[in-house]
Length: 118
Image (tube, rainbow, N blue to C red; front, side, top):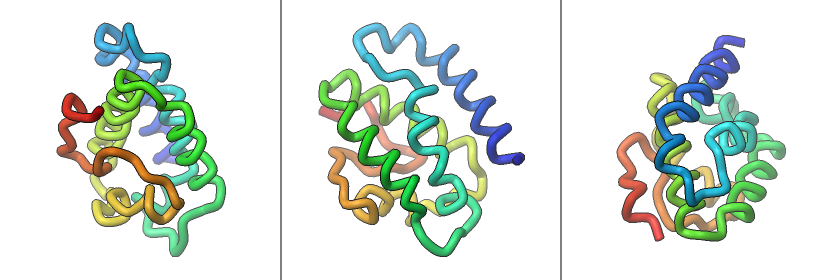
């Protein structure tokens, strides 16, 4: 339950901070957070396996992020989410796309430079 509260706060904060830089992007941090919410247990609470709903969300998010602005915005939201979880397992976050059979043009981490995402 605490994880969901953190996620809700993160969504709100991302909407305020990223609003001005997302004018060309169709994705919001709320949308991104909704897709990756099922991954929290695996990424921050050491659940033993990637939930099917997590991979479904990651795949859907990847399918939505077709333009450079969308990919950059998704990246910014994921970096923001990663930084909001002190217990985030960095190796699991970085390996999540591969675990779900998805290729993305950047590494999910707390330090990814989303401006370089194409």
